[in-house]
Length: 248
Length: 273
Image (cartoon, rainbow over all chains, first blue to last red; front, side):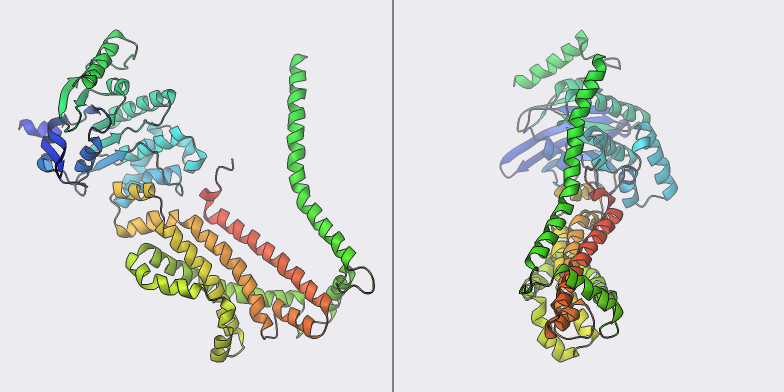
């Protein structure tokens, strides 16, 4: 009974490549509609973790459940946003948003409805018929984020989506993703190495250790929103996480 | 007062820019004028072996009056173009399909790629003797030779475009669980449109060149035929007139293709605005 409240359950997840231990006995749960950030030093195995979720790799030990079932990208609805913005250049903004839904062969009315919602939420009305090359990088990244949310994913995975962006753009898109998260009630797993970003976004932050990776700490961030990056409590959390990553 | 001065300064800069852009428009015209001047210069005098502009012009007027083999100049141009269009149509359909096949399917590429690469090295005109022996000297063999010449660039470019789809686009397909067919139709082919169009462009110019050569080898119509006729009867103004027509038509074909590309692939007009 208590299990069903979790959207994602990770049980004792372990992955070795031969003698190289990458992930070591990771367990955590994500509630439905939760926004969880994972922070950790570079090379801490987060790519491996993602590839386990998408079943590119199978775990050595343990398992990964979505809605109580072993994760299966064919059955479960996972959506991704990666670091590099990658809209399809031969499709207009609207066609890009429709793309994933059309591949899934959803009924046209459903696609129309979802795409309209996303276009409105993301303020893309005036770009609807533009091609990606006519847009700025941040607008292109908005398309990618919108495209992911339009899938109504069981779980939205974001892998350092703002890694390449300047501060202003990052702040702007962080607020954007928070708004979408609230409006759609999606479950989000957001990977970043930017600690400030994690504290700003997350309800919970999972701090990873170096290889073999374990969860060093599962930290709740209960600051009120909208969060103020200069507030003492904010800085305290940020400093705390930074120290956790620094000292092994 | 001060503001006006600033505007004046700006406009001076802008005027220079405007002048620059005008220079680029004037340069092509200047080149043509220069060429004409050169033409006049080399064709002057009784002993000149170069047909003069007036001679070519008069030959043009005479051709309007007295058609060759029942066709005027434009009739002959059209005869050549018809052959090119038929051959191009076939070459595009077959070439793009074949290019997609060997670009997408590794086994097909391993099987057919080497043969194709060897055939590619054979110039289209080398086919003339065999094609003439098989099909005589009617319309079909000419079209066939043009087809062979136009096919190669389409296949090569299409294959390259399909085989080298950027990984990030394929990743998008993977993320959304596209199946193999969707990968090809929704990702690979659209992303290769640039390359395919490069093939179409090359095949058009190749086709236009090969048709003239094919016509020079026998026939009763076409611009290539006009050149041979001019050569055989010592009518050099006719040769030069035909050459000018070949150049102009080739140029127009290139413009038409460019225009088509803009309509069919609007996203390739990169960052123009």
